[in-house]
Image (cartoon, rainbow, N blue to C red; front, side, top):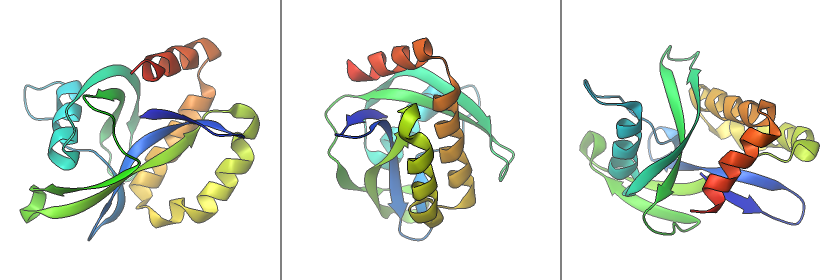
Length: 160
């Protein structure tokens, strides 16, 4: 995740990508036997996006209704500054070019309702339902946490 400010809205952005066959997705994967969720998150970032990173904070967990899987969400710090968009060739399933971009998650509570209504009508329709659920869950989670907790998360992300 990264923090972004514009003239009207302050928000976090989550790393996302376009899969050439499966549409818009978040970086995710399986936790290998004997490994921790943080280790799996960092491995998936490396394998799917070519990013070397470290975990800076745990955001939340979600049981995904579409899959029944428990998803773990982390804020991570990349070893280098990441561009707004890029391509990465992954070896998954025989190799694909993934198109990476940053998807916004609004955290300015006073403007979130209107923005989310507009967002769900436009951008979210392009996502598979399990990723729609994950994005909506993250938006709700970030809105529901205390101001102190949100400030702690933003502080850790801002300093990276």
